[in-house]
Image 1 (tube, rainbow, N blue to C red):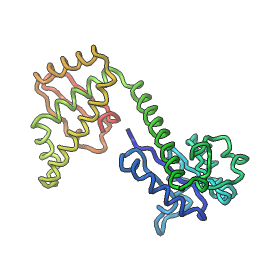
Image 2 (image 1 turned 180 degrees about the vertical axis):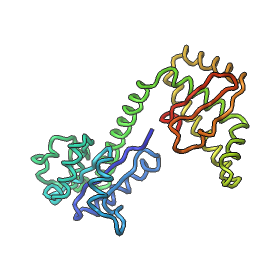
Image 3 (image 1 turned 90 degrees about the horizontal axis):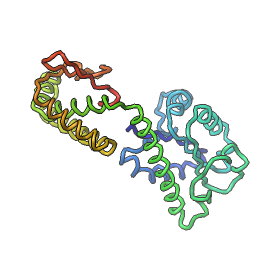
Image 4 (image 1 turned 120 degrees about the horizontal axis):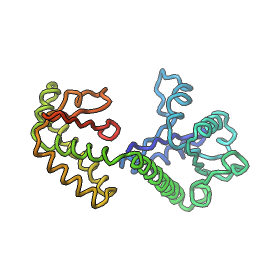
Length: 266
């Protein structure tokens, strides 16, 4: 599953609090659950309005609005909020200090820390920041679980069947290494080894995720299918190594073809 992108809206008078929240989010970032973007990420020479309003904000999953007496009257902060609402982006107010935020557009959204108690009223303040992170983690995990459920609903038995066969057969045979050598000749030996190990590791994760979603009957069918598939000869098409390919083909020496969908395999 892709990580969720968090966009931080704040008043520059609250830069110190913004930086501290980013520190508290580092664990979730290291886990690969989220990425975080804020205007300090704009580089010299970038067009800041384009970076914010065209590139990053519209492609975010969650808007973290750092609420203070300054931010709720900030033209830019409120413009970012309006765009997020128009795009259907989840909005989460983070209450930094007591202010009239409940009379603002933000007033209809559930806020963090717990019970909307401003961070500067927690003793010590670190408890307030931690309350924010704990609340965000629940939101992120719920969003990712929902996305995964939606993906699973659109996956047919044939999709699972094809992908399990494909990756089990391809990645755990010597033929995968041969194709890496053939199609990636510029990679060093260590890079080739890392590519193979990474692919195998990701495949284990992918297969284990789906094991929990399959009924006992489906698992039995797939085990039988894998056994049957291993008895047949196959070869990879060069399209497997094409980063622009929309699907990867596995061609057996018999006329039967098995296509693995790119959105499930990449």
